[in-house]
Length: 334
Image 1: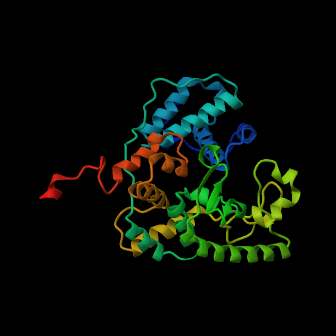
Image 2: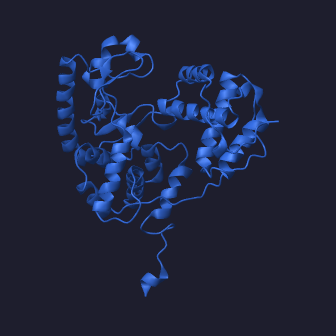
Image 3: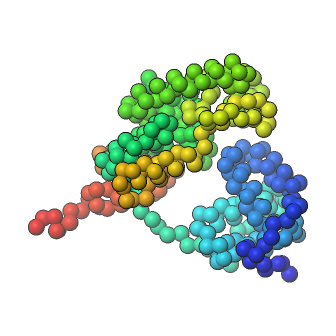
């Protein structure tokens, strides 16, 4: 019988299944999963191994996987999206690493997914938060609001993705591994040009110091060996410190870590005296809502946000200033 030890009681093993995790990473790499997805899937497979005290997943089946997912909802009180991510990780493990045909499991206790209306700032509130920001977090936040980017999409931008002449940002391998084009706001252009001038000078200094390398997607580093040191491929928002690439061993800069920007935005909202819960994603919500308020059609907003389904974009119709259906309250006619 499978071990029913609760998640909180399971002790991590001193001897993790390194071979299995290595096979998992290779399978994810082969299918070009993003680094963030690889990290998340590896985390959930480790949690699964700890829950069953390092028993090999090949000896476990659909019932044990279902019990683990139910425990996440009942004992850990995880959100529905977190539980779904764990399920996707285990499905991937069984199908592509263990080559076992495990189907969606019945009887799993599902975490409840509440329908939440997004937090949206007014234009005055956006201005107040931006005024309280400085340096890179200010430029990044202006792009999040002016272009509707997700934070990681913004941090993953390369210099070549910025088209100042056309006023466009070309997003490569965004969420769902899809490309899209969005607006490069004119208001961000002066700040961005000054920022890029400073970044380019620092890149030149890195090159003189024998560094200046940046990781490239797919097999580009093999196809274009010098591209990893060239200016167009550098991150728009590079990290403050040099680091060594774990694959190539070259020194260079990764992109800025998201946590620093998140902290700066939260602090700026407090400084501005805003009582709403303001995160980096709030700028994206505000971008979409303000476009709809200004009369742009929902299909255009859908394309700019990169939503597959227009129903995802429809959530913003519920937070428009004119009301969910454009209905005027009778109290406003008294």
